[in-house]
Image 1: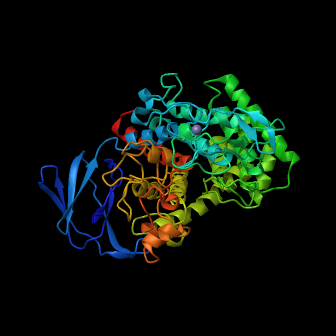
Image 2: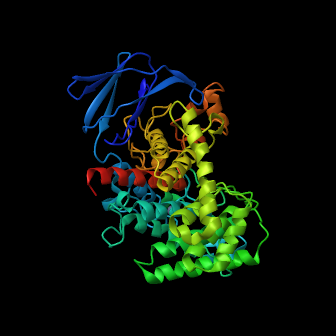
Length: 540
Ligand SMILES: [Zn+2]
């Protein structure tokens, strides 16, 4: 049963907008935890929301005093919490969700609780193209609901964490009870390093990076340690090589203060990746080899990955050849508000606008900043047109709709940081509210959180571990009307509106899978709002 009032189920912060969405006419009664009426709120006229098919309105609560509150409308009561630091736990859980994806090692009960399991995928993998060549490549995160490990998506996910730490350290530097906790390095960087160490091993001797390390086909719903079918190092690809080079050049700068040799190793690897790309200018799209049906992660171009790599390498080395390459790649046009694995141009924008800054020069700073701010207007427009403030057009609810929504949140945050304006910040907050329950499904999309929570994500360990609650801290891809499975269409039919095209059912990878590169933009957004709320409450 969904409520007539939709709220951020993780809570609201005093001092930041507190938007709720209402589906009922008439006044809403705001009461405190004792039931005493504080205010009667007039609801602006309900209007149709195209994505959900609902008539909705929204209210700004403006509650200054932390506490538990109730909203009552049409005889129904919704509870919400206002507190000083409402998103610390969920942001920490989203980072720790990546720990639960670790491969090649066991998860000990002291860190993983009921979700502990023995080491998985520790056998040597055969090179698909040279089956006689065996390499043992432990580590990395399981990509999503499956046990594959994919270079490009992993590099982007690690990149999101690194920028979250670089820009919003006070919002994402808590200890997370992972094996490296207490090492003197923030746990978000300890966790990212687990992926970076694996990425380094995915490089071939000539500098190219293998596209992925997976089985020939997806495992059934078994625990990772029981998934013992042979693993293969799949062929190299342009996109994987450029994305890995970009991520490693970024990481080389971030880890320099913590571990010089590790930093140097990453920069050297990034440079060798770049050299391979220079020697192989012609883009060749990756295709699954005959007999392989694990994730494809195909791409139409490597221009955006090369652009990101050139920006990060320019920042890491200061060499003009990288700036020149980045400028040339920029000239062909970039979607600067895209931060997903398919289009990483936004990652290059992050580097230019918040790392290089004026050092980037006229094109990569001044012009790029102007272009970026123009592109951000689209995210703002989408948010304004939605009854929920969700920055996604009704016709774009596809597989992993959470990604464009969080990408737009990232862009809006950057826009607010660049201009000092609160309007884009507040629109970004609506995307965070969406993820945590203020949506047409009345669903908090992060496992382990919210009154109406995701219980059956498409995630093999959650399905196979015998624990009732799914592994916590994983964000679901959410509604997908554009590419649903036939089984989903059979259950939902064609009339359910896009923002409600969702099944909280384990087989529904199309609407309820999880992925490391959906967690990571949520970490970026959560870390930013954590930083704001902690600054406001004087609480680090
Ligand atoms: Zn594994």
